[in-house]
Image (cartoon, rainbow, N blue to C red; front, side, top):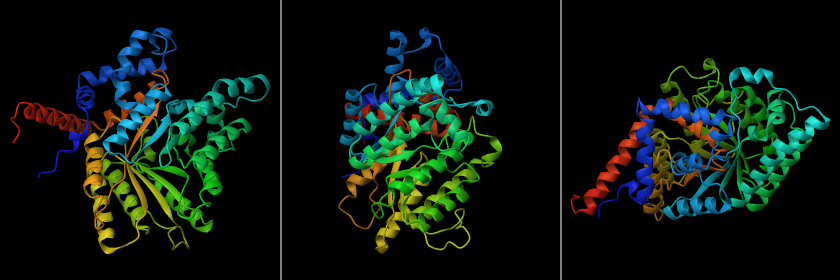
Length: 430
C-alpha cells in the first residue's frame, strides 16, 4: 500500500487556513499590506486598534492569523491545541508565553534602569509580575517531556536594561526566573532560553550559562536549560564552542537549540552571514557536529579542548534539506550501532507543516525499526491574548518576508493537498 501524503494527517480546517495565510504571505501585492497592518496594530496605543479591547478586530484576528500561529488565549484553548497536535502524532510541544518586546537598534542605547523606590515597584508590579505569572502558567500547561520557551524581554524594561549591561538580573526578576526554573525541573519540563536581538544577547548567554550550572549537572546526560544559537550570526560557532568548553570543564550537559535566526530586520547586518548559502552551511555544519558530538567546520574546538561534552539538541528549522541531512546522518549512526545525541526536531506552529508532518509520519512508520532515525517531532507555539501575541505575529510575518521561496513552497504544498482531497472525494484520485 502506498504511503499516504504527509499533509493528509492535518484536518481540513488547517489545510484551508494554511492555504489562505501562505497565499497572502507569498503575494507581492497582499503581503506588504498585511505586514503594514500588523505593524500598525502591534505598535499602536489606540484602544480601537487593540484586539483585546476591540471585539470586531479580535474576532477577525483570532480566526485567521492568530489561529494559524498561536495556541490559545486561555488554558482551556491551549490544552485543546496541544492535545490536537499530540493526537496527530507529535511527540510534544514547545510552549511559550507571547509577551515580548522587539526594539529598534537605536532604542537599545536608550535603555534605563527602573532605579529604586516607586519606579522600581511599578516595574515589578506592571512588568515582572505579569511575565512571571504567565510563564509559570505556561510551565503548568506543559506536560513532562515538553519544552517551555522563556523570552526575557517579556519581563520589561529592567530586564532589558540588565541584559544590555550584562549585569545580573534584578532581585525581583531573579526570584521570578528561579521560581520558573524550579517548577519546570520538578515537573520534568525542559526550558529553552530564547535568543533575542544582539543588543542584549550577550546578557542572555551569561544568564543561560548560570542556570545551566544550576540545573544541567543534576542528571548525567539530561539538560533542563537550553540556550539558543542563531546560525546566521558569524560569531555563533565560536560562542557555542566556548559554551561547550564550559560544559566539559564543569561536567554539565549543554542544552542547545539551533535556529537560523529570527531578527534579520533588527540585528546589525554586518554581524550576519553575507549570503543565505553561508547561513545554510553554518547551520548544517553545526547541526552535524552536535549530532556526531565531534568538532568540525564551522564548529572548531577552543584551544586545548578535545573532548566533546554531552549535549541535548533541539534542531529548529524550516529547511527540508537541513532536516533530511540530519535524518540521513542519524540513520547511518543507527545502522552502525553508534550512540546517538538526544535530539528532537521542531518547527513553528503554522509554518513548514509539510516538514513537520513528514517527520510525524516517519516516526509512526519507522517506530518498530532500529536501523533508521526515528524522528521526534515537536511544534513551537505561543499562547496569550490576541493583543499580547501581536508582536510575535509581526515577527512571524517578517520571517515570511525574508523567506518568500519557502512560503510559496508551503502554499503550493497545501494547494496540492487540497486538490488531492477534492479528487479523492469524487473518486478521481489515482
